[in-house]
Amino acid sequence: MFQRGVRRGEVLRDADHEAIFAAVAGAMYFRVLVMGQPVDERWINRVVDAFELG
Image (tube, rainbow, N blue to C red):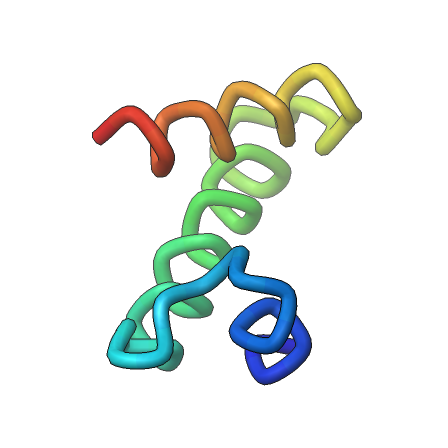
């Protein structure tokens, strides 16, 4: 998954792919199991925006 993103220029080659995956998986876990909320397209876009904007 990350290699395709690197090839398309969407993910930095030097990025820590394991840490990125853990952060996203953790956010999804928290959203679903702790908050009891769905992982919908709107939420995904918010998370992506947060990562892009810092």
